Amino acid sequence: MKRKEFLGSSAGILLGAGMQTMIPSPLRALGRARTPSDQINIAAIGINGQGWSDLMASLKEPNVHCVALCDVDQHVLTRREADLVKAGFPKADTYSDYRKVLDRRDVDAVIIGTPDHWHCLIMTDAAKAGKDIYVEKPVGNSIVECKTMVDAQVKYNRVVQVGQWQRSQQHFADAVAFVQSGKLGKVRLVKAWAYIGWKHAVPVQPDSAPPVGVDYTTWLGPAQNRPFNLNRFHFNFRWYWDYAGGLMTDWGVHLLDYALLGMNAHTPKSIMASGGKLAYPDDAEETPDTLTTIYEYEGFNIQWEHTIGINNGNYNKDHGIAYIGENGMLILNREGWEVIPEKGKMEAVTWQPKVDDGLILHARNFLQAVRSRNMGDLKAPIQVGANVATVAQMGNIAYRTGKKLYWDNASLRFTDEAANHLLAAPYHNGYSIPTI
Image (cartoon, rainbow, N blue to C red):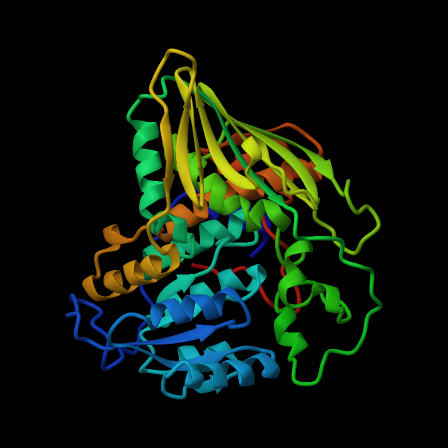
C-alpha cells in the first residue's frame, strides 16, 4: 500500500468487514472470563533486556507458565533458557522465528521485547493469531505504526497492554489525583525531563560480519539493509533512526505519559524542537544527545528536555515531571512526589515516596485482564501507549524538519508536507506496513 493510501485509510478506526479465522487454544477463553485458577501459557519474543524483565514479573503470578522463548541471537536464547531453569521454572521451548511461536495452539499471550522497529509487525501478527499481548514501549517506530497497532487491537479484540509500568504505581496515581484536584490552581506549564548522566559517547566502529549465532537478516526485518555494526546492535539500537527514536521515545514516552495524563491531554496543536549532538558531535549515534521540545495545548504548554552525560536535571532530579500551577508546583518521578507552594498560596506536601513495584503490578494487571476479558481494567492499553508514542514521535519530527509544526487531528496529518513524509517509517527487504 502506498503511503498516501495508507494515511487516508487510517483517518478513522478500521474495523474491517470480517475477522481472520482464529484457531482457539484449548486453554484460551476467547468469549468468556477465565477463573484465577486457569493456567495462562505465555511466550516471550525478544528476551535480551526488558522483555526478560517483563517475563520474570509475569511468572510471579500464580498459574502462569512460560512455554516458549524466542530471540534471533542464539547466545541470548541459550543464556535465557538456562536462566529460566535457574529461577526455578520448567524448561521452555526455544525459537528464532516468532511466527512459529504464534502458530502454537497452547500459547495464550506473548510478551514483545524486541527493538522498536519490530513492535508493529509482531503485535499485529500476534493479534491476528488470537494471542493477548504485552508489548514494550514505545508502541511503534512511527505515527502510522501506532495507528496500525490500535486498529489491530480493535479489529481482533485482543487484550493489549503497553509496558509503561508507571501506570500501575500507586504514588503516580496519587500525584495525578492531586494535580487534578485543582489545588495547584491553573497549571500553565508542565515540564518533563530525563538527564542520563551514566550514558556516554558511542565510539565509531567499523562494520563487521554478524556474530556467529545471530540471524542478522531477521534482526533487520523492515529496517534498511546495512552491514552489521556492533554499535547498532542490542541496547544501542535506540540511538539510530532506522530502529528507534533516541531518548525522546525511550524515556520520553514514560514521562510525557504522565504529563499528558495529569492534564487530560492528547495530541498538541503545535510542536517545535531544538537540539542536536551537542555533547558528542563525532560519536556514532544519530539521535540528538540534547533536545528541548515544546508542545502547545489550549491554555498550557508541555516542555520536554533531555541530555546525555549530565545528571543534574531540573529541581536537582535527573528525571521527572513538574506540574507548575499558580498556587504551587508538584514534582513527580519514579521515587516519589512532593508539592512546593507559591508563598502563602497553599500548604506544602512533603516527599511521598514510592510504595510498590510498578513492573510486577503492571504484569499482574495485564494477566488479570487476560482472565477477565475486561479491557477497561488495563492500566496502559494500546490506545494510551499509541497516544504518547505519537506525541514523542511528533517531537522527533519537529527536530528533524527544523520547523514549528501544526497538527490537524481530523486528518491525522501535519499541515507541512515535509513533516508528513516522516509519519511512516519506510519499510524495506520485502516487508510492508500491515493492512488491518
